[in-house]
Length: 166
Image 1 (cartoon, one colour):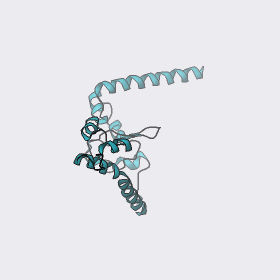
Image 2 (cartoon, helix red, strand yellow; image 1 turned 135 degrees about the horizontal axis):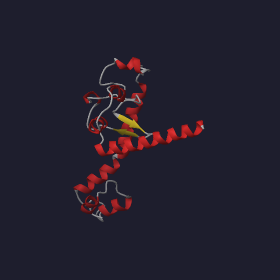
Image 3 (tube, one colour; image 1 turned 90 degrees about the vertical axis):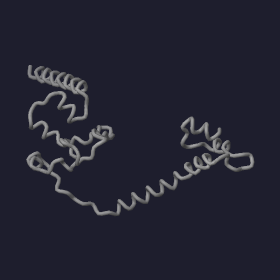
Image 4 (tube, helix red, strand yellow; image 1 turned 45 degrees about the vertical axis):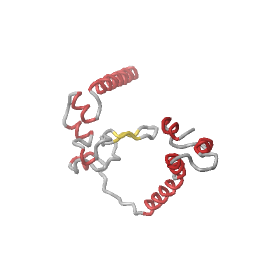
């Protein structure tokens, strides 16, 4: 496999066999790009060591405790946009039950958000699907789908509650 083939195939890390093919029978690498690809694959362990050293340095830093609001009453008059991204009502990110994290606004910093708390949006009352989509970074159609799904879940729970009373 020549370097141009590796680049065409988008190969970032080469196997030993591919590295052998990049070499001339005399043992020299065939061209400059081949040397760059081999150097890149050899640099991965070095990058991991740097990452581990940076993590160790972060672990040595003291943990700063913030007075995070615990109730809506404490949060209501707080600084906006809300700096507490880990709050379950913050609009910047969503965490799934499986542990994955989704950034709702990957192109914005927290300070640049116009709305940061879902409770502030709810306190203002009803909103159009366009406004909800803008706040949640969703399309109007996706907001409609979620509304239909939520209404069906509410109706199902009401039917179950009515059935339990009888």
